[in-house]
Length: 146
Length: 264
Image (cartoon, rainbow over all chains, first blue to last red; front, side):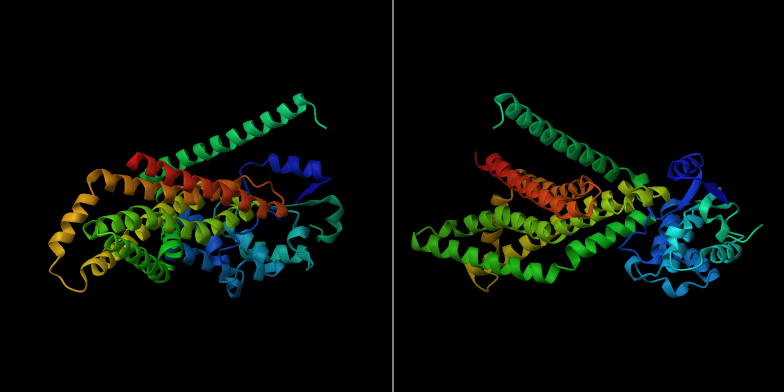
């Protein structure tokens, strides 16, 4: 967990981790691509994989989180959990050294997000080594004590 | 009322901004062209975008477009042939109709059709991508938007305009033969002689260059206009309007310049 006191400190914390792949409200999915395509495009583009091979990787990740039901939906048809999962997996498949989930309250406004995040990140334990959550300090009571 | 100095300042600022916008467009076009001829740019993702775009821009509209082009071509050819006969100039009917239809009308018709259909869609899509920060999101995911989103559209736009012009021209040539000689194969030699006279290497080069320039304009200008949209949703229609007006003038400029080069 990384706690920020205000927006300025939050920005500074993000800037201090340039190697991190950001999962944030201001980084939307490509609207004309499905969830599967949004995730698969990363290995397809970066590793020159065929679409079938890249989509297999993306599908496996979605299956780990039990979210294959949203694979062929596009952004406007997604609920907040599905959209968050798509954004998170787009970052995970990039295999960055750090994944930084910025202000999860903005990404998951309709659920009690701390336990959901914990479960989700546990399911992806083998795929992301270092996943950090950046939230405002006033949301700290929402999280279970560690 | 503004003083002359304020008026001149305003006009000068506007002119400078106008020149800068064209400069950015040319720089963007140059970058897209360099990427087009760089083999390393092509990977599985960019190839699939090129194919998708050719499908949407050319293949999807092919039957309807060819039917319309054939109808229009046949009407123009008939007008030219009938008028030529009326003035006792039948021997020029084929040459004039092919020059009017294949060299001038069909390339312009094709690019206007693609501009209205795909150019407007590309302009809107890029403006919305820009406003919603989808471009930033792609960059954050390690995907270069220029290479993944824009260059493939430029390539497919140029190929689509060229291919549709070529196909509609072939249809028009068949119709011109039928209109002048009727349904019989015995005049193919005469027809070939006239066609060879019209399509000299210079004329073919001009036609190819014009089609490719049309194809570049029909994608580059809408993409650039979309990218220039400020990041506020209500600017999306303004970006499309600006892009389409700019595209119209560029298409007309290319057409007039090519006419001037050929006939003056």
